[in-house]
Length: 241
Image (cartoon, rainbow, N blue to C red; front, top):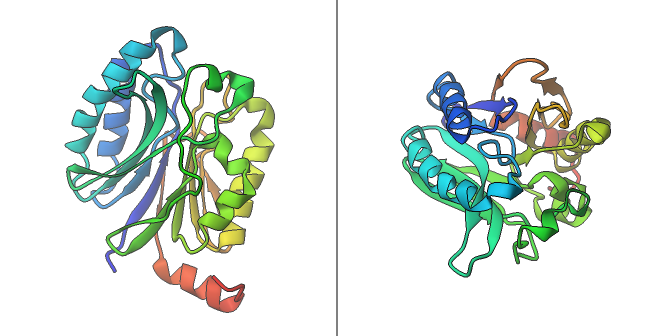
């Protein structure tokens, strides 16, 4: 299997969509050409409820720019998207080899942040596992990390993505849940959170053995992906995965 690097990004979104996209593209360019890159939730626009139409239009432009960087890289982020019926969704996009290979709307909206007043939830009852180049991936968007039935849906995934804008007051919960998810599902978990004042800034990569490496103050953290480590962990402690 082809070797890959896992890279989690962590930066503060500004009011300028263009500047956020410039920074994201700059960080992606600095990752290895074979990297799996995860950006924080809605990192290009934030939850800009006052300008939802503009945010959705910018998302279309951003996807075009990001697809050009998604050659051998796998790029993952969430964007504000407007559907033809006029409803807005928070949609995760997975880009690879110049195309959109997977998308997934956020099912569980964070009511404490009033997301339910602006977004329509996705309608999928279960979280899917999808495959790219022989690697099985799963994805939970921020608040969805708290729902244990989704953890079971993703049993058997090799890598689980968690793009987030997690509240600073609950930073410890973010770390605890991300690390527990890796240990429970015996897989890699990549978690990317924003570093805005209100966010946890707890981006990290956790191994199947529970070793947790945090971005800390780094905009980008890259670690080698080892498929054999997943197999070793599942063979060492056989829990039926």
